Amino acid sequence: MFRNQEIPSVVVAELDDDLLAEAFVLDVREPDEWDRGHIEGATHIPLGELQERVGEVPLDQKVLCVCAVGGRSGMATQFLNQLGREAINLDGGMHAWQTSGRPVSTN
Image (cartoon, rainbow, N blue to C red; front, side, top):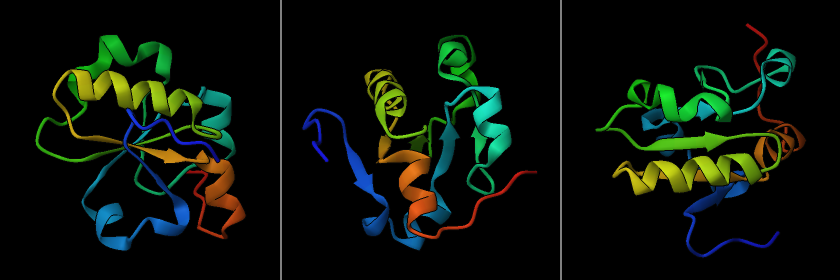
């Protein structure tokens, strides 16, 4: 998959457990997508609400942005990095996450 060089990203195969454990996982999908399954421990802020809710994203923690395939989370990553946060896009999003056999939560 093409990677935008201006947006830091990681593919699921390269996502190590240390990064996942230390990161604030931000899911920017719509509520119906979130309800169908998300990464355990993720925080749900739909992309359309991120600007007004950005205060909920920590300043002192890496942010792993997730959506369905990586487009919306790429926009979130770019936005957060412009605000001085350290954000990384999950390239391939939840589609790649689930395809790789990673666990999905519906709680």
